[in-house]
Length: 249
Image 1: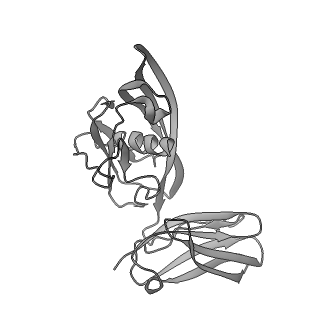
Image 2: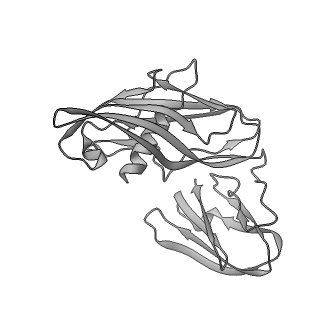
C-alpha cells in the first residue's frame, strides 16, 4: 500500500503542462490521512484516445515522517521526481513546483497533457529520490515506484488486440450507463471465464462461455450494476487479464 501511495504521489507530481499549473486537491483522502494520492492506483489515470487532447491532474499529500517508508523515527525533508517512464511519447509532464521537489508534509499536484498519436498500454515507472533525516542523520533513498498504467485507445475505443496471443481490450464506452462491450482475442476455441469484482474484491458477476479462435466480444449491460467502479477479469486456462470499468448513471 505504501509503495502504491508513494508511486501515486510521485506520478502525480511528475505530470504538468510546461506552461500550466494546478492546485492540489486531496479531498478523496480520509480527513486523518497522513499521506496519499488522488486518484489512487486502483482508480488509475483516465484513458487517452488517439489524436484527442489529453489532460489529467494528479494530487498528492506528501508524508511528514519516514513511517510512510516503514522506517520509524525519521522525517521527510522532500521527495524529488527524477523521471517518469512509460508515458505515451506525446504526453508530457511538468511539476508544480517546477523543479519536481516536494517538501515533506505538503500538498502538491501534477498535470499530464498532450495529444497521443498511437495506441499505448504500458506500466508507468516513477524514479524518485527521497531525502530524509533519521536520528539526525540525513540520508537519500532512491526508488522506482509503480502502480499506474498509461493507456491510449483508438477513437472508437477499440484497442488493437494481439491476434497471436490471448489479449483483452478496455471496455467501450467507459464510463458507461447503458451498453458496453469488451473485445478480446483467443488463439484457440476454448472456455473463457468472465468475472466482475467490486472494489472490495467480491465477485458480483461470473459466467463461462465458449470463445472462438480470433476476435470475440463480451456484451455488458450497465443496468445490471450499481453506479461505481469495478474490476473485470477475462481468463482462459493459462492466464487472466483484468481491467477497470466505471458504471455511471
